[in-house]
Amino acid sequence: MQFDVLIIGSGLAGQSAALRLAERGRKVALVTKRTMDDSASAWAQGGIAAVLDPLDSIEAHVQDTLTAGAGLCDPVATRFVVEQGRTAIEWLITQGVPFSRNDGNDTYHLTREGGHTHRRVIHVADATGHAVQRTLAEKVRQHENISILERHISVDLITAAKLGQAKNRCLGAYVLDIEADRVITVGATHTFLATGGAGKVYLYTTNPDTATGDGVAMAWRAGCRVANMEFVQFHPTCLYHPHAKSFLISEAMRGEGGILRLPDGTRFMPDHDPRAELAPRDIVARAIDFEMKKRGLDCVYLDATHLGRDFLVTHFPTIYARCLELGIDITSAPIPVVPAAHYACGGVVTDLNGRTDLPGLYAAGETAFTGLHGANRLASNSLLECLVFAAAAAEDIMTSQAFVHPALPEWDESRVTDADEAIVISHNWDELRRFMWDYVGIVRTNKRLERAVHRIRLLEKEIDEYYQHFRISNDLIELRNLVLTAHLIVKSAQRRLESRGLHYSGDYPDTLPRALETVLHPSRKI
Image 1: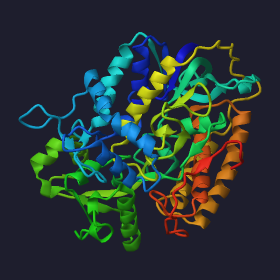
Image 2 (image 1 turned 45 degrees about the vertical axis):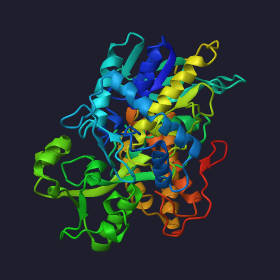
Image 3 (image 1 turned 30 degrees about the vertical axis):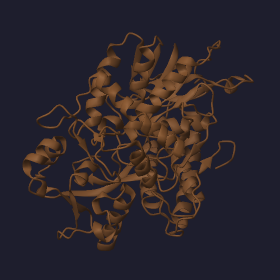
Image 4 (image 1 turned 60 degrees about the horizontal axis):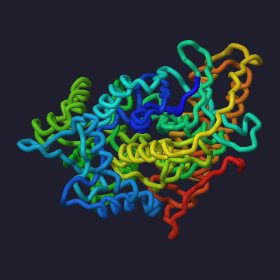
């Protein structure tokens, strides 16, 4: 199969890039592991941060982002994204996204979230991501220039260097058709990684099952640098319930006045930070983790009952309905919550056009490291980043020079056999997620990280051997990518000899006076 652009991932970055390119005549393939609706973007509740209020300003949004990023945000990238905010929102409005409006007038309702000094988060009730994805997906499905490959997972990128050519660039990818159980060769003039994060590397996460670090792992194997992988954001408030899997309690609930309490009703956040519940996520998550470990608690509670029934049902209908299904009436009872792995601030290094180190390969969204998030992402900047860099990458692709695409070899599985013990994959998957949670979680130490590296190397050896001898499967591809991504996270954490933002070390509790990025190079052994 041959296309102008191959887009791997169907979240907001992937879909918006696909539409922008298709509308300008490019033939696009959109590859997604499950369906168009399965992405972290679709799960986003809070909204999209942008300067839309006359009382707000670009400077204030930039400063809030820099503050949350704990000295590691790239000022140029930050300003670039913030300045594009209004344009990005206006594009979504023209696509038909039904953002919530204020009662009694035609203005859009803006909410405030932790770390923001103004109300600047535009939203669709408490299911913004779902509404945006549904709106764009309908247009993507109808566009004649977009071919959608659902239930397909990319195995690896195809590069000119791997074909023995002197001038390296990305030429497409090998893709497994999961249902047909066969690998197809997809050639493309340009390839765009929008595979999301790697939350499934941890035992507890707010991410969908598809978040297995695929883009980072493929780009690394293709020779691209990655940066700041140690900064994994743990969302402070994931619903704690045996029948609730990865259900997020939106940041906006604290933004509107929700209070975190111990089981006896005591409020504890003012003891940890003067901003209390409105402190950045890393501080809130660490405070909850501290209180749980100190007191031996399974969870803490988010109390929003004082906001009133009408307000809660109107502003948080999804959360209200889901909690009610599980026997929790948020209008009269607090919500049990725990921290969970939520967002990767690091990723594949890109420039302001979304270009990676490999010519012809772009990345955007959670897969990419653009310099925007620094050591901690400001709430609701993630969807904004998806939109801005998808647009920038699409524009760069449109203006880039064409080249003669070589013939690509078919996938060779002549020397492998069917797997005899698939149980190995599930056991390794469970082991990885458990020790990553125990050793590379909210608080880290040298000893914990060393233990994690030792186990990762053992798993890598087993998985590499398995990969070389047996036919690939969706589970094997994901596990291979997860273990590599875990290795990059741990090695990055070992290199940061301080505590900053989302990375907190028990051995190095202080913050160094100079903020430096952690950049890993594939040419150097990890």
